[in-house]
Amino acid sequence: MRFTLITIATLAVAAVSVTQAREGNQHHFGAVGHHYSVQAAAAAAAVAFEQQAAAGGHITEDMHPGTLYSSKRLIKVSENTKPRWLGLEDILALRRAGVGFMDITDTQDMHHQQDIKALGEYESRLPTKLSHGKQVRGAIGQLSTKLYGDVLNPFTAFHNRYYDSEYGRKSSEWLKAQIESLVDQAKANVTVEAFKHKFPQSSTIARFYGKSEETVVISAHQDSVNMWLPWFGRASGADDDGSGTVTILEAFRVLLHQGFAPERTVEFHWYAGEEGGLLGSQDVARQYKKQETKVVGNLHFDMTGFWEKGSEEIIGLVADRTDPKSRALVSDLANEYTRLKTKEFECGYGCSDHASWNAFGFPSAMAFECDKLEANTNVHSPKDTVETLDFDHMLEFSKLAVAYAYEVGYDKTD
Ligand code: BES
Ligand code: ZN
Image 1 (cartoon, rainbow, N blue to C red):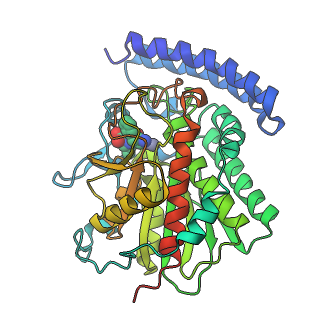
Image 2 (tube, rainbow, N blue to C red):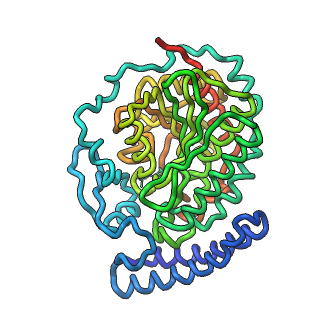
């Protein structure tokens, strides 16, 4: 039996959450208040969807409103196994089983490329010593937790931010408007662009133009998923990855405020479709590779807000599919500029968007809320809410993003 009691229970929680989200919207934010009728319709559709699926025993293409899964997708679950063409049901099963994967349907050419340099082979352009302490400390002093709540409350009130849905499209448009409004307020010479994909949600790229072509990328993913009912289910996605989204947004706000004018081009990326197999970040990394953009480093933030009280508070650093020199740098930055030490841990294949940069031969690192993937059991469910987050913990990650922007962005390695 594919549709278990858990599915039905999740659906019930999702339905309740629809109501909560609706109230939240009306209470706090006029901008997304019109989602009320959409959400009510979605709740009804979710029930119909589940009934049909239970009756038929399987999900078919006409039971979901998206377009991405109307034909099979090429899915990779490890470096060593051949990618396979999988249909929707199999992909959903992978996600429910917690198997990390990359959907390489639209990036096959890059994955096949022979010239991708193995990890550690490329010449690192990252700084080996820290030399911008004064600027970093000045900027860090301006960081606050206020934006976290201001942005996360409306952001998590979108019923979900599923990339292959209208919710996902609307949430990405809303987020882009928040980014643009920060730039407008600061009257800064920073561009904000939508990077479009083959599904409704777009990634957003904000760019501080440097004097050199070398590019620094600080990133998070903006989509969320309810692993049982991706299109209709409630997925607040506060920790995964609302936390990373606002962690880098707060860093971005402070850099704007400080009149940040780096030597290198420094970009902030909010990826779409991470939960679909790193879709957004692969599209972006593929384009940068094709255009021969000189990406000197990527620092990715996926989940920064939850840690088990009683355990040691640390910054987790993903040890696999990341660049050793980037990890060493991030560790130095944490020691110098945050109150936390780093600890390395394995995240597995897929895992998050750092793996896209890594797979295409760019040096990448990924900071995580702790050193245990399974610590936050709320992910991919309606229970991943703002109340479960620790904003003071998140602030340390914003410090890391600011420090990375200055130390790598102003570096003149030659
Ligand atoms: N933020 C998660 C990574 C994660 C997974 C954290 C499980 C904690 C527990 C990320 O968004 C995610 O869900 N990754 C998937 C792979 C993705 C391509 C579906 C994973 O690692 O299973
Ligand atoms: Zn995530």
